[in-house]
Amino acid sequence: MLAHLDSRCWPVWRLHLREPLDDEVCQTALNHAESARTLYHAIGDESSAGALSCEIGLMLQSTGRLDEARTLLRGVLEQWQPRLSEPVEHTMAGQRRRQEDANVVSAAACYLAGVELEAGQYQQALSSVRQAEDAGKHSSILRRAEAAMMLGKILEAMPEYDGEEAEQAFRRAVQEVEPTDLLAARILAHDLLGRHLLKSGKTSEGERELNRARALSHVVPLVGSILIPDSGNGVTPS
Image 1 (cartoon, rainbow, N blue to C red):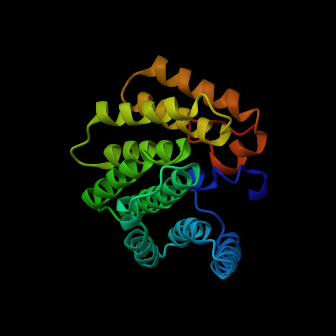
Image 2 (spheres, rainbow, N blue to C red):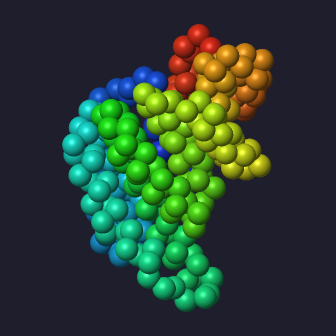
């Protein structure tokens, strides 16, 4: 089933699943990812290996192995964060290298924030997502949207919950992905914003965002039924 999803957006979806994936599915995905990472290392493609390490962290989190996920993602950050301080040549290749490095750092920090959020360590989660936002300035639209969505979720969960700041984070995510063809990310961004607005008592605005998510979900009919199970207010499976 997962093969039907845009591979660029799989980590985005996994960050925000409301139901766990089947353990066997997760373990199979983990095995494939670890094999692929070994191959990337073997051919010297460290950027792809780093990105896969981030996704492996998500898979470990999926199976409840939070400590392993945390250790892995911290290791990725220790390896890749210093690269962002290194000078790069003012060429297309240099800029591409900077973006690839920032891509790995932003992903690792964002996914680490998700681990800390699940563990109830809100300040650590907030620190990590800020790191993801900083790296995202040099990375892709998808990474910036991921960080914004994660920030909104963290702010919603914190005892000293700032509803306005959380709303602005979700709106930033929508603004990032709306002009793109990243349908899965667009659905999720509208869905998260809509749910947040409903919780805040902004019913008409919330329903409007959820309707946008529903409309987009018809373009990717399997996404709603697999990854956003209906919880009463959100995207209803097609």
